[in-house]
Each structure stands twice: as structure tokens, then as C-alpha cells.
Image 1 (cartoon, rainbow, N blue to C red):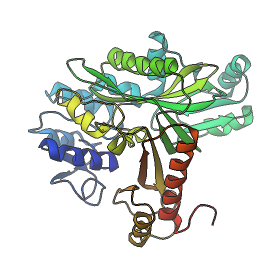
Image 2 (cartoon, rainbow, N blue to C red):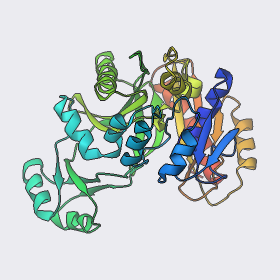
Image 3 (tube, helix red, strand yellow):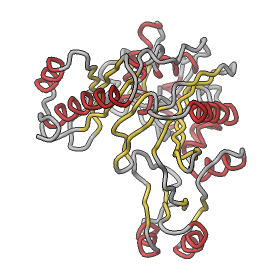
Length: 377
């Protein structure tokens, strides 16, 4: 796996019971996965020589991020390195304009969009779509970075001054954000997890509610079918996370990710097969695991760093206060606002009251890990 962040760390954990040899390409020995993985190679994913040396002897190379340059992906494939997903598929996670154009060609519902180079382009688009409009970096944006909501031409001009390639999208007054996670193997076996609701703040995922509460069976099936169809059309091998807006009684595709995804962390405790094991099964062309829930409802809440770098005393408190809580820490240095782990709680019940109780437990634990205080203290 190219990249040694928390996704690689949790994928490595899933590889152990499968007896899968797992190697990571890490920037430094202190990277999240490099701290625990038995086979770590240090190198720069921007450097083709490092990538070729890393891939030597591997049956398949996969990724925990989308940032390997396209030309390097092509060179690896030309050298006979099996990539999963391949460079042709990964292009649609690296280039948002290419992704939007291809999904539109396939008839997938998306927000209206256009490439923009200057304020005049943005203004013309806004005359059709209305203000505000959303400007997105064509490349490199994630976790809310590279996305700007602009109320007028002046605000758009400030974003354009960054001098990066941008596209403009209509602002969608969505009801909520959903995510459909699916897996696809080289033999085109597919598996779809329950559709979840993601609770975002400033473009960053804070909570995942599985399954999405109050989502009709028909709309959930539409989301799963749509994700599987996209995976097939783009030739994805491995996991595909499709981030969606629920708006106007239907669905619009917002973003794609071809790797394990934050919206799927709940599956470690909440599903029969975790997303990390499923990704390994898919990229190695093993039979896929059951994606069905292992609990009635599951809530995952991300843990963000606070001022205190010492997590040990705090997680002892969390474990003692709620023995059913599962804590996952990523081995990252604590910095304010940095994603350093997540907590998960599962319940056998169903309904709004049960979900509210699960959310309260998870939010309390995440707050205490971050600040040493319960919510509201």
C-alpha cells in the first residue's frame, strides 16, 4: 500500500488474520502505519524510482491516498506493476473536472458544473445556477480543503487569485450528506454496505450513522445500485466510496474515493466484514465478505486533537466510563484539530431514541479524548 497513514494502519491490521504479506511505502518511520507494520519501505511517492523499488516483488499495489502523480501510475503499469485500482480509474479521484465530466456522460446525477478561469466565467455560471456558487480545486482538495462557497463575484475573485485550476458547481441546498460504500473485484464480484449518514462540519466528517436513519429502502437501494454501477463503469478494483447529497427527494453525487474511507470506519465493529478486510479481498481477487451489519445501529465519531498531547489517562477514563465503547487511536502526534482517532459504539436496537443514546455515548467519549472534558463542561 502506497502511503502509511491511518488507512494503511487499519488495512495492515486486517491483513494479519488473512496471512497476507503487507508492505507500506512511508514518508517517515513515524507515519501511522509505519509504527506497526512489519514491512516498511521509506520513500517519496512523488519519485518514480522509489515507487518502482517499493513495488518490486509485490503481487498488487494499492493506495491509501490519491496523490501519486498520474504519469507515475502510467509508468508503473507500463513496467508491469499490477495496480488496484488502476491509473485509469484513479484519474477520476485525482481530477474533479474529469470525474464530473465522466459521471455526467454516464448519466449519473451530479450538481451542475463548469471549468472556470476568471471572474467572468464564474459570473456567467452564477447567472444560470444562482449565487452562492461553490468553487473547487480540480486537484488536491480533501477534508474540506480546496472547497470555497462564494456569495458573490468579489469572493470568487479572491479564490481565483490563488492561481490554481478550479471548477464551479451549483450550491446544492441538500437535506443531508450520505455515503455509499461498495467493493468490486477483478472478476466483477460486487458488495454494497448499508448507506450511512455523514455529519460534516466545515467540510470535515465528524460522525457517521449506520445505517442512515430514516432513509427509505427505495432510496437506499438507489444509492447502492448507483455506487455499484459507477464502480463498474470506471473499472474500480477495491473499495469505492460515493459521497452523496440527499436533495429534492433524490440523490446527487458529490465526491468519489477509491480506497478505504472515513465513512466506512464503522464497519470494523459494525459489519460482518470490515471495509479494510474487504479492500484486501477485492484487490487480491479473493471472494468478497458479507457487508451486512453486525449490529442494529452503529455510530462512529472522529477524535480530533486538543491541547493536551497525553491520551493515555483520557482513554482509561473513557474505557472505564463506557466498557462497550471501542477506541481507535492512529499513533499520530496530537495537534489541535488534527484527526487522531475515532470511537465506535454499536447497539442492538433501532429507532430515533436508540440512535440518540448511541450518539450521546460516542460524542461524550470523543469529546473527553480531545479535551479531557465531557460535552458541555
